[in-house]
Image (cartoon, rainbow, N blue to C red; front, top):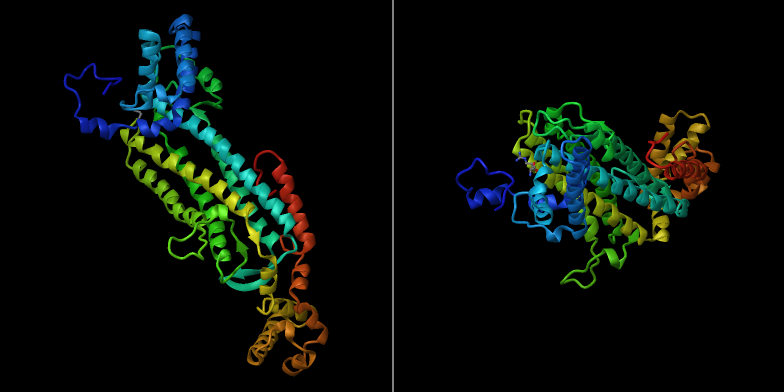
Length: 462
Ligand code: ARG
């Protein structure tokens, strides 16, 4: 296997050593970032007179050619992407290729590549989050009045609307978008020019390469720049949080699409059949998102465990930072798209949802609230309504069926007008407190959310 090192070695390494040490397959994810980082470096070398401008141009031309050709032209029987690109560069422009690595090490190079990669991926994640939020807003508006049961403890609690429920997921995405933006700012500093760990004696210009690559500034300490991986841990944490939210949406879709709920039909394009039971329509994508969240969460733990024992200075252990990062980002991107697809094509069973609100005692709180407005302390009102619920259960009727006679019998203190608050529509309509599902409150929330959505970036909820 061709190497970038070996001058001081008299024997070749064992094949197993070569294979065990290879990262080329993983590195292919950021072959473009590696070239872009090298272009910035070589321009700086030329401008600083460390190599001649002609040499710099030649090398830059070679790198551009490699970029145009694509990774199919790289030899992949090498240790890593840095080696593969340098070998290809040598094939294209000859010995001058060897000057590219002046005043640089793979240690600052790989850290630069990873930061550039994360930078680009976060831009994609921002976009996918915005798209999913846009869909939630659209559906939040469309289903603002569609009644459904609201749950606590997975028990029917109080009636809400589907639009209100979907909008709850908008805000989780907003927070994660905000977190992603903060991470973008935090990670956007340049390690390039730190060399192996301790800088270089060449008169390099780190400010110039940082600016050219779109970084805010160079990382001030070369040892820190080549050792730090906390931004990858942040990214893994962020991916874990996004996956948790997507997993919870998925779990709802699994539940709601089951016959017991029957609230939603997922489209054929996102479900699968069973090889034995012809009637089955399985929500596999939702299940896989839920299932893969486990690995996304473990990815943070994987790298944190790797990092905790490492002294400063590059350690080869950190080669293991990239598989979890690439894996988590891929999962997040795919899952954001899949949740979008599942929701976009979901056929909500509005009648079934609305009718399941009836007869489930979920307006009991409304009756208690009503009694409280007549001056009865809420605690006492709660108890009175408890008695009414028991009476209904004994008679096998629902709250909506309660007649004035039945009411007078069990709770004479309750005025007969109270019966009107037991209808689910009215229950939602009266809950107009800020953040509630009442029509005015939900309208205000939708307008608030749309304003934020139309603003570029992710201000939190303010
Ligand atoms: N594949 C290595 C990594 O991902 C590249 C850096 C190698 N540096 C070294 N000194 N061996 O970390």
